[in-house]
Image (cartoon, rainbow, N blue to C red; front, side, top):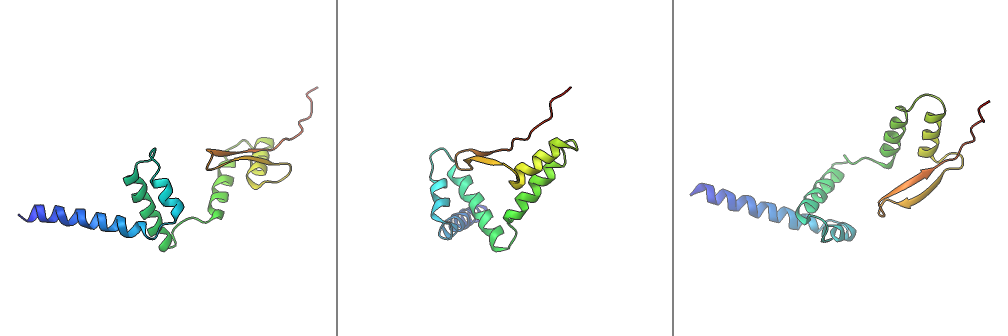
Length: 118
C-alpha cells in the first residue's frame, strides 16, 4: 500500500515542479517547448534545470563561450591556421558573420592573403 502512494506522490511532485517551473520561464522558452518537433517533457525538464542553474549562478556567461572557442583554436597547427581561427572567433580583421543560431548556426568567414608559392 505504501508503494502506490509513493508513486502518486512522485508524480504529483514532478507535475507540480513542471507547472511551477513553467511560470518562471520566458515566453520564448515555452514557445520552444510547445513546438511539435520537440519532446515537450524533455524540453520542460531541461528548461527547469537551466532555470535552477541560473538561480544558483552556475550558467556560463558569454565570456565562457569565447574562452571555449579560443581553446578550440589551440588545437589548430601553430601558424596561419591558428591565427585565422582566433581571428574568426574574436571577429578581428575582415571577419564576416552570416546566419543565426536560431536558423541553425552562424558561419564566420575571414579571408587572408596567402603568398603565392614559387
